Amino acid sequence: HIHVYFRPLPYQFFSGIGFYSEQVYDYDLWKPYRQGVHKLIDKGDHIYIENYRLKDPILYAGAARELDILHTITPENIERRYHCSMVFKRDGEKFLGSVEPGNKCLINKRGCETYLVSEVELTEQTWESLDKGMDINEHKQVWGSTAGPLKFEKKISFADELPIKN
Image (tube, rainbow, N blue to C red; front, side, top):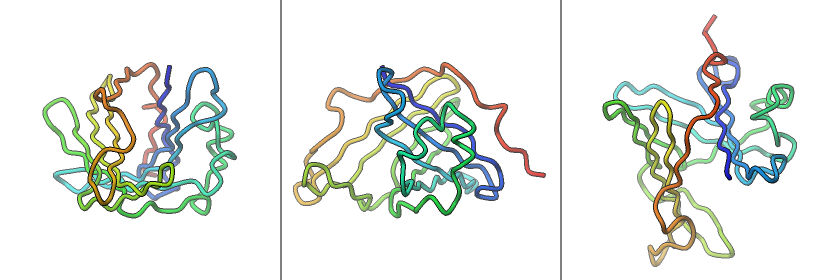
């Protein structure tokens, strides 16, 4: 099984709402296959999420489960992933998100330059995500799910850790 964590960061980290994310297989909880830091920006009619990579991600493995590790992440340890932000809009009881327009979120996979196409549906209890890497020249899928979105159910809430502005 896959575990997807989004753990709130202290308000001071971004002077706003931010999260650390970690995706990991249950058979190897200390070797995440994806980690990130995310800054949420309220744009009125949508939420813009700036995405950041960790400069040395292995140092923060387990931060989603261990607050002592989470609190070692500082703004100096991250760098912005330009053109890879997500845009979320409310649609009734859910939020629909996708990578920002332009096909400029570039990811090299197995020697092939691709751009990310990401679609997310988020509810109070579920997370569905479809990530695909498309060849920058041929616009054909190189990596990612061909069988539809990955579907997750919330098992634990960190809502009580959301920072309150002081």
